[in-house]
Image (cartoon, rainbow, N blue to C red; front, side, top):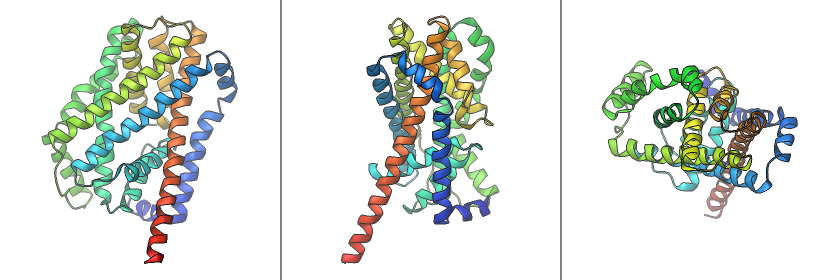
Length: 315
């Protein structure tokens, strides 16, 4: 791992990593382009753009949750700097392995004087926050969804008590300390607080609600009855799909697993063809949001470096 981190500090390899991550994300969309075109033809353009806007908001809210934890551990970044680090690093999750976005965040955070052990700790804890809040909503999905969902994916809910205990700050700080000692890293300068974890969880819950709203909007355009009940089902269903996809760590960004879960949740509310359209477009639009914000963050970072260089030269 140490050698890998040393390699990632090379500028050329950083660029190569970003290009590979972007290519993986583009492939995730392009490999299904035929189906995407058919899906786009069967749904109103307004619904597609509305769902894309919600996808962008979802990613921004996950960044807000991560930024709260980063501040709680002692690194307060401006909104622009935090967006650049988070959005660019998140593109790495499309590369198989499940760790590339974490390593990218550590290296990019170092450019802002954030210790790498702190960046890695924050990214891991932010993922844990997403898991716990997502699992809580997933339980809701299993109550509202067809019985086969609980039968086939009920195993996901068993992880909730375990991850909830780990997320409690006394336990979490102790575990982080143990991991840092085992990896021969200095301890964190300050512990995570209950206030920080709670606020991050609130942002995470809002992100799940927005992601569910994206699915609900797409499904509504294809015949889903728009009601409080179906909204709750969409929110819980997406959370269940995400957590199931995350727990199957060998699959990059949960591709395939999330689609299967979401299709099972919506099966009794939409015709099979409409379910396929919703599941496909939901994935594609969320991927497009990740890529768009990643490219935006990359451009913002370059502009900031040019401005810094200009100020240095003029002084």
